[in-house]
Image 1 (cartoon, rainbow, N blue to C red):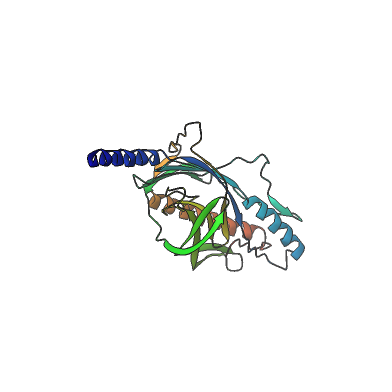
Image 2: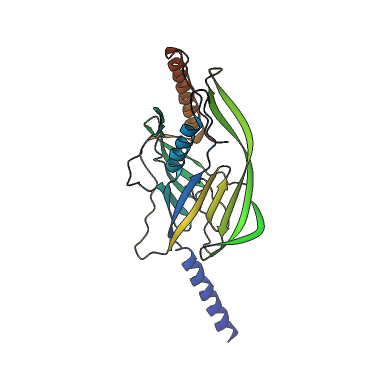
Length: 274
């Protein structure tokens, strides 16, 4: 009798394990960004700055889809029905480039693939995952029907901005605390964008002046989920890609400096973010 009970228990546990390995779903996220837009007050009125901030805030409000299984995920921006419009006011305009990045993550293989671009040139960044050093907190809250736990981690970031006064690229380093809310009710390590590695799906992120919130979840849909890594672009590792991007940013700054000289110094400086 004890042997039969033991065999039944083992079979039951194996069936649970088998079910958890098939865990999959689709989550929808919306993003928001607070703006710290600083323009030369001698050339841009306060009313014009407010109009630009409103336009830029709208452009930063995007929707993304995270398709996930137990070990894989794919994070992509949902196409917008409205054509992108430059933020403009009184003849002044700021054009925001679209974000066509596709992020594939495999937690079992500890690897990721990002399909992205620099100035229109496609790249395929392949590298090993670097797990964030999350600090698990006791605080909880509900997001929709899910009980979520708080987690945080700190990191240093370096931001660059162009100063028209000195014709230089100014770099500033600051410490940012990221706050995540994850739910163990969905036992996968995935989350939006670069945020992952927690014992449950990440439903909300607050990262400096950016926030990401999950607005919809469909678990184990009837239609089979297929998650394939992106394939378009020149294949590089993360270090090489960062070096190429840094070089292109410096070239862009040089172009801005040359344009300033040709325009007899009638330019302005723009800073978006912290």
